[in-house]
Every structure is written in structure tokens, then in C-alpha cells.
Length: 336
Ligand code: NAD
Ligand code: UDP
Image (cartoon, rainbow, N blue to C red; front, side, top):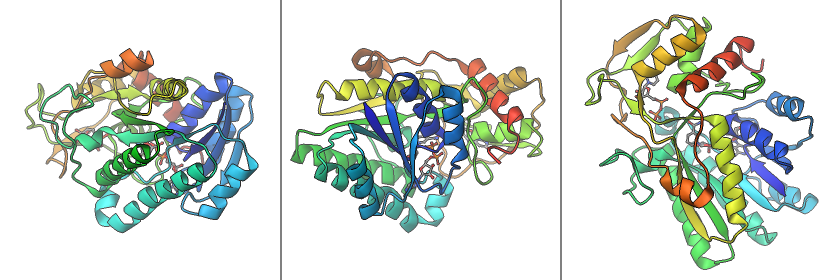
């Protein structure tokens, strides 16, 4: 198949590109590089020995996006493009809604006009807000509580309405838990453009000496060691989930929603210990107050994806940390 990846130069998109190319698909990438570098795609080509057709384009530019569909016979789209910082979304809600929601509207309009109706969307576990129970099923109540999360939730609802209006659409809403790690080669990985917001890239930058110490946001949660618990999933397992979702869409399922997580929760302290073991480096830490908006515990029930996609995450936290560290020490300043 010829697959268009919006936001394909980013962290998850670049890893998914490797998976798609190695599975014999062709990849077209649309990315405005607002949070990534074209070098990631060159590295993907180096890993796979295959070419990517890259368009530096903003998803909100309808004419530009339409031109990409006119020039290429696209079979399906994986829609990664979006702004993803929770903190930034609180400061700049209009920018987040404009970029994430308008970009999706433009994409869907162009897809519809060109008769392309198979779409995989990057949603997030953040749509569950503070879950009432764990593990979280796909039918758990939703209710995000920051603009980033709400943009994901609104897009899920827009895509649901689109499907209800025209049952020829096949749409997979993939709710990712916490993607971490990197490709085994160490050639591609997560490369935050600013100070990392997320735990794993922050630990990596402490380990490689770019940052002095990790601030641990709270040790007074109702969790086994008091620190926050999350479901960390290796980015290559996540990439595999996209391949399986694309295959599923070919069977005409309509609108489907899947959690992509491991089903296991690890605390901040457990992740620090695993990273120290993988890297052989000590990670200086300081316990500070809770980060506003953080929830104590979040992990998936991934059984539906296993049952319906035949997909399950295979890699554990030791492999996640080993691969994250390899990427970080080989590329201490990212793609620069
Ligand atoms: P990323 O920032 O590395 O990749 C997103 C890409 O989209 C970037 O390359 C960016 O340049 C591009 N982009 C943004 N707005 C664009 C626009 N208007 N036009 C064209 N390109 C645009 O992020 P990622 O970690 O790879 O995340 C991919 C998707 O998965 C995002 O939608 C994100 O919200 C979602 N997600 C990520 C996580 C995570 O922790 N990484 C968790 C859940 C969901
Ligand atoms: N966390 C932390 N220090 C950091 C970044 C994150 O202690 O510098 C904690 C955070 O409070 C949460 C966990 O690590 O308990 C995962 O945070 P992340 O931002 O990576 O994911 P999210 O909270 O969005 O699931």
C-alpha cells in the first residue's frame, strides 16, 4: 500500500515509517517540521535502504495537502501531525486547537474529496482523564482536562461524526499510552526541541550529562512507592500496532478504538532504576511537589487490540531503557 503519514518526521512517525517500509509498503510523509527534523527521514532511509517521498507542508494548507493527494495514489493515511505538549497547550490553547483540530478537518476534507477513506488517528490515553479504575478499557468514561487532551477528544468525536455520516470510512482511533525507547540501530529516537516534558527523554538527557538532575513530581501518591505510575510502551511495539491497524482497516471494520499499551504500570522510581541499570549511569534525582494536572496511575487493558488486531507489546522496560540510552549516547544532541 501507499501510506501517507502526516507528522511522519516526528518521533512515532519515523519509527512507524521503518516498520511500514520493512513490511513492503511505500511511505509518503507530510510534515511542516515544526517539532522535528528532516534528518530523521534520512536516517529511516539509511536503516531500511528504501526511499521516502517527503513534502515539507503544513497540514492546515488545504491546497497544498490536496496537491499531495493529486500527485500520489494514496491508499490510507496515518495521522500523527499535531502539537503535543500539555503545558504549552495550557498557555496557548488557540494555537493547539487551531493546529490539531483544523489540521484534521483539512485532512479529512481532502481525503473525502479524493476518495481515500482509511484513516489511523494518533489519540492518547489522556482522553481518559483521571481514570476511575485501572486497567483502563476502551469503553471507560472519557474526559480530558487540558487543551491538548481535549483536542484529542474533540478529534475523536469529529471522526466519529464523519464515520456516522458516511459508513464507507474506516477509522482506527489508537489511544497510545506512554511511548518510549528507540529503534535498535540507535539512528532514530526521540529528539525534543526544548526542555523535555516527559519522563523518559528527561532521564536520558540527565544520563548523557545535558541536564543535571531529574525532578520527581511527587512521592505522596497512592501508589506502591508514592511516585506516579504509567504504562510505558516501546515505540517499535507501537509502530507495529499501526501496521496491524492498517491491516484491520482493509477488512472494512468501520470505526474502531484500541488502547495501545502493555497492560503493566511502572513507577517513576522503577523507571529510574531500570534506566540506571541499562546505562550504567547514576541519575541524580530530587523529589519535588506534584505537577499540576498529573494523575496517580494509568495503565491499559490492551486485550481488545490483542483480540481484534492480533497485536501485543513484546518489549519490556529493560529493552525500552537500553534502546533509549543507545539513541541518546550515540546522538547526545539529537539530530543536530
Ligand atoms: P512529534 O512532535 O515528534 O511528531 C509530530 C509531528 O507532527 C512533528 O514532526 C511535527 O513537525 C508535525 N506537525 C505538527 N503540526 C503539523 C502541521 N500543522 N502540519 C504538518 N506537520 C505538523 O510527536 P510524536 O511523539 O511523534 O507524536 C505523534 C502523535 O502521537 C501526536 O499527534 C501526539 O499527540 C500523539 N501522541 C503522542 C504521545 C507521546 O507521548 N509521544 C502520546 C500519545 C499520543
Ligand atoms: N515525571 C517526573 N519528572 C519529570 C517528568 C515526568 O517525575 O521530569 C513523572 C510524572 O509526574 C508522571 C510520570 O513521570 O508520574 C510520567 O510523566 P510523563 O510526562 O512522561 O507522561 P504523562 O504524565 O503524560 O503520562
